[in-house]
Length: 314
Figure 1 (spheres, one colour):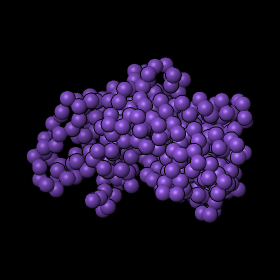
Figure 2 (cartoon, rainbow, N blue to C red; figure 1 turned 180 degrees about the horizontal axis):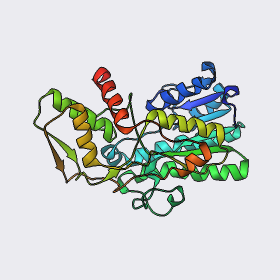
Figure 3 (cartoon, rainbow, N blue to C red; figure 1 turned 45 degrees about the vertical axis):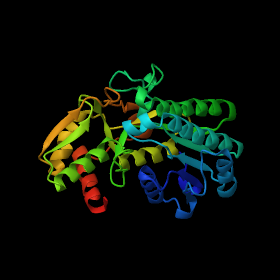
Figure 4 (cartoon, one colour; figure 1 turned 180 degrees about the vertical axis):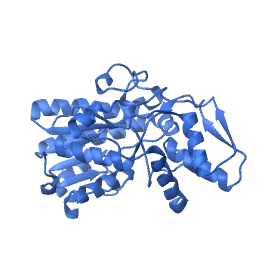
């Protein structure tokens, strides 16, 4: 059990959606605020090796929690497959290698459910991560993140670098990215339904057929799992973080529309992709190794997210 209150912790992406929650939980654990360092991109572009090296030289962390990523929904993944592969691969590659050179105590890597094969048996078990190729629209992002699992395993065996790997399912919650082009499905749908309600529109149009299924995890629950992994793990055996609840996109749209108070028609554009057919995680390993399980009910989390958007959305 690592006592994080005695460590100097860099949280990449610490000012972002998930990072804000992780930093708050670290402070609640008793980590002094001055021991939590959040590098900003204008100072450290971690896709550049020189900047990653300079971060270690300047900050001298003992622990790195790597949350930073370049990612988006199906549209963004389809438009930027090269950039998403390069940026996510480069950030992890540089941070792990220079952490090893600097004697880093532990590296915590946040993977992605996009790393799983397209037709993984449901619920997804960590042992199935390498049993096929990911869904094509998000494969470059998923493969880049998954390659770092292998790097950390190699660095543990050759250099004794302690590490942990968590694989969260799709996240949602307050402060999420609500940009229409780059957001994931829940914030995109909340914005679409809210704007349609305010405009008194008679319908909304959604991508795909609605037949695909997804699982969603509230951001604070994911953050708690990541901090527990930092405290309890030393080997990069992937650990799923999810709720075990699967919902079709059709039912999700209807649920969000109802919670937003949008009463118009829901139309589907089947010319647009559905993405991976199904997603639902087996979380038994997280329960066994971390003592972790998701606490936030789905409708409770959606209501909180909708309320946040109504107060803060533009």
